[in-house]
Amino acid sequence: MATFFENKYSTAQKYINFWFLALTLLNLIETPFGQVPVLSVDGFDIPQSAAIIRYLANKFGYAGKTPEEKAWADAIVDQFKDFMGSFRQLVMAQRAGKPADEIAKISSEVAIPARDSFFKIINGLLEKSKSGFLVGDGLTFADIVIVENITTLEKNQFFTASEHPKIVALREKVYAIPAIKNWVATRPDTQF
Image (cartoon, rainbow, N blue to C red; front, side):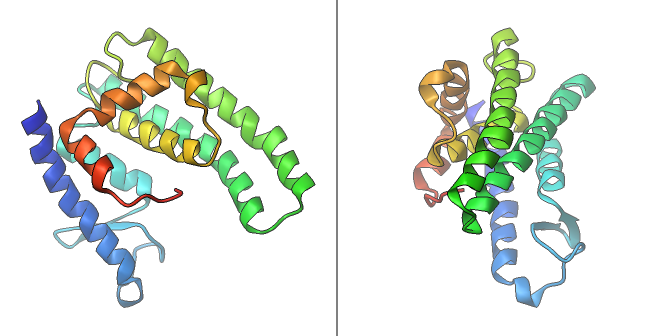
C-alpha cells in the first residue's frame, strides 16, 4: 500500500508543484476565472480548489471506491466548505481590524456554532466507521481535506485536540502514511 500511495503521491505532487509555480507567475498567465488556484494538466486548465482536489482524487484513486463512497466523500468536503465560510467570516473580521466586540459576536454567533455542528458531523461519521476513515475502508480525499484543515484550525486556536479524540485518531492515521508523513515533516509551516 505504501509504495502504491507513494507513486501516486509523487505524480500528484508534480501537479501541486506546478500549481505553486503558477501562483508565482500569476502576472504572466491568464486563468479561466481570473483567479487562482488553477491546475494545468497537459494544457488543460482546471480552476477552483474543490474541482482540482476532486480531479486529483479521481485521477489517483482517492475519490472513493464506489459511486456511493464518492458521493459521501464529496458531501463531507462540501460540508467542510460550508463550515469554512463561517470561519472565514471570523478571519476576515480579524484581518480587517474590526472592533473586538464585533469579532466576539461573529465568533459566538456564527463561527463557533458552525464549528460545533461540523465537528458533531465528523465525529458521528467516525463513530460509525469500522476502518477509522471517514468513508469506506480506505483513504479518500475527504480524510486528507478534513485532517489538513483540522490542523489549520488547531494552529488558529479553533480546534482543541483533547475534545475530539476520534478526529485526532484520524489525523494520526492519515499522517502515518509514509508519503504524507514525509510531506508533513518537510513542508513549510504556515498559519493556514
